[in-house]
Length: 328
Image (cartoon, rainbow, N blue to C red):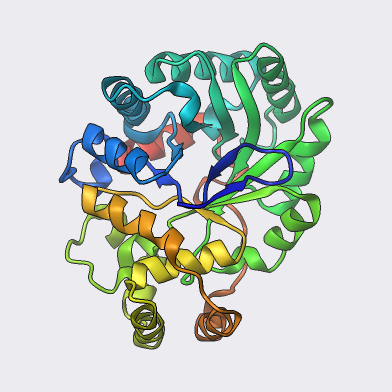
């Protein structure tokens, strides 16, 4: 495994992380390995970054991660726990801090390394009040770093303008060979500002592996997955470059993100996925190979607008109901 700093001022993390949306999440179906087996395999193969959220399984993902780390006897300081505050709970300082305390309890830890706002709250909510509350939590040692997730540039700038003592260290968003829209303005902005990039759905929910067998709710409702799974040109190119490296298409797709300066956080429903993803850190693509993959995926640049299904005009209670009905 290789390691990198998340932005200029963030924590040191493995170049491949582990996303835990699948833990306790009905949209993905049942896990093939237990959470404890998956977490153990990740740590054994050098993965230090674990990304979860309070809405994943309505808190179950956080709980399962904490239980797995304790059951395996993994020292707290050896891992970086990143979790996320739901946008509908980022409506005010007290509500946000209540969510933070609940996450700490479920995780069974005294602090969270990276606490991210999962998506922008409605525009009439007190975002500055929330962020200054998170600054206080940093000062109290409850969190170490503040991050954002699914924020377009204008909202990142708004959030940063709220902060007085601490800056945003990273922004997490959908990014893969099959979804490159953030490259148009968000990624250049983050690079200029020294803010780290976390890439969720780095394999387009498995489409970039070229060998997806299951069709679950999470995949069937994702247009990025549907397009990529039918893109013969992209999948053929991925396979060819992967073969030249003795790697898999999935490992090559993750290596492309690492080459772009992002930290991908692929999920895993079984131990095999963890082992495969960790080995992506050993794949180093040449500049020419990166350009080839850029060219074959240029059609996916598009326009990035953040977490559009939960836009800033949707009231918190409606957001919460939508998520609980559809995929929590």
